[in-house]
Length: 145
Image (cartoon, rainbow, N blue to C red; front, side):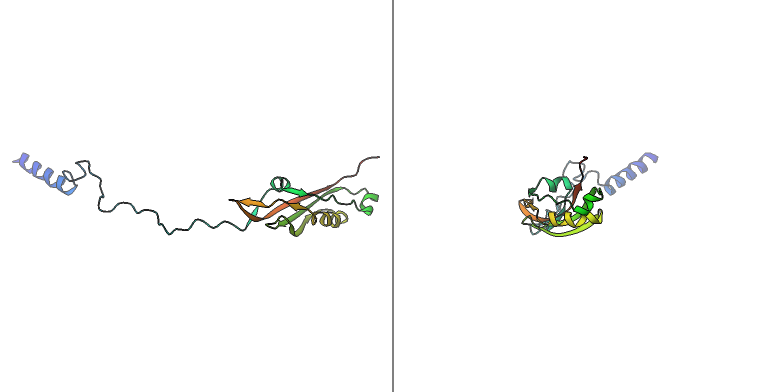
């Protein structure tokens, strides 16, 4: 009698857990509900209108670079250094905004005046021009003598 009770329990467990159903026969589990296909109406991600690039990348895009005129007062006082500017370059490659990040006040005006005249090749993102936000460093150094 003990043996009959166990085989009945085994049959009940097999029925409850799907043994003998399509799973055991090697058929796919959810034929009635296949995974959803990606939506055909999904839009590709929108490209940014402005990107931030390193100084090295933006330097490689320069097509016209005007050298700053060393300010006479800075020259007389042996003032040297780097002026750091934050620049916004248009899709056409023109400087449209400059902000001074750092630099000696006697050198800043000359650096800004020169950089405003710089021209860049348009920066392309997936074949389309975008505005560029970058850093520009203008070095002022006096030669000994």
